[in-house]
Length: 130
Image 1 (cartoon, rainbow, N blue to C red):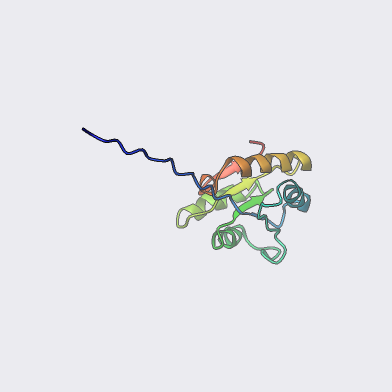
Image 2 (cartoon, rainbow, N blue to C red):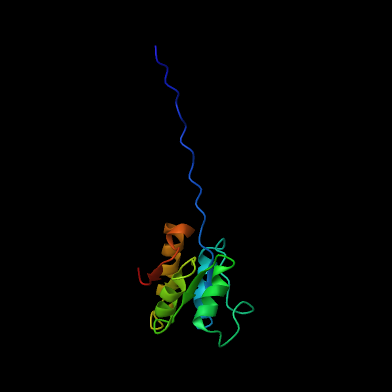
């Protein structure tokens, strides 16, 4: 007689991304997401990223504490990001068009944050709107 051992499914642990605002990101997006999702750990750039820091250095500042960089910089950030990945890993980048309404940007960030764990941002650029 073969006995079967029942295995209880282990609950998955979801580690949420921890965003870091680039210097160019509108603070209203940071504040809006924090209001909708108080548990989100979204750092503003103040005290984190000095003004006029180069994109590669900004990516490095986001990498060391494992922060997903959120930026409006469609012009130079993608190229610097892919160069960065040639030698290092990144928690990821989210790019939001400057022209996107703040409320829409907040909603899109909320969806991205709720529907993805931190590993799904790694080494990727996520373009908003999704």
